[in-house]
Length: 115
Length: 112
Picture 1: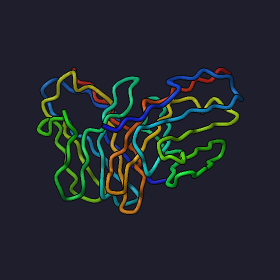
Picture 2: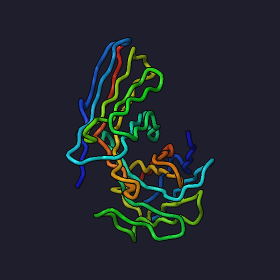
Picture 3: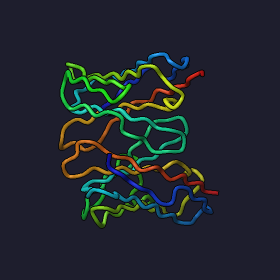
């Protein structure tokens, strides 16, 4: 299957700082990338959908000024959590979808802990 | 909005037993996907279903896309310890509707 990587896998930061998470499709071109967050023992919650070269579409209730998404190339999307607070602590997972694929392939996730 | 009802929420079985879980929806989906998630990892795609009535196998895993397009099941035969994890179903409406709708997950625990 297609390979998607995320970096970093784990990050701890102080409240008020910004954190950038990268998502890369390693062996295919991802026209669309998705960002999810997952709280313990819960399902994945879609935050936003990003298409290469255009602005991300955010789900209802997700602050676009707080969660900045950039999809600058067909293999890279970034999520920046700005002015992070402890309630932003979560497991953030990206997924990527190619031009022809009808499925999404997920990255390994990034565990964010805000102190 | 669209929702998927996945059941059971958790299963505790003996090694070697067969497992069955399913998802139902009030809406029609054109694609059904089954993922497995291990602790601290992202979901891994197990089986993708694209046609109503389709029955697809991947090793000991078998999944079917319901005829009504509103349900799907996943079976695991002869379970082994590495099958432990959380299984998620996901539905996609149409090719233009890129978003996936996820079920709540089924947590599988296996007693050796």
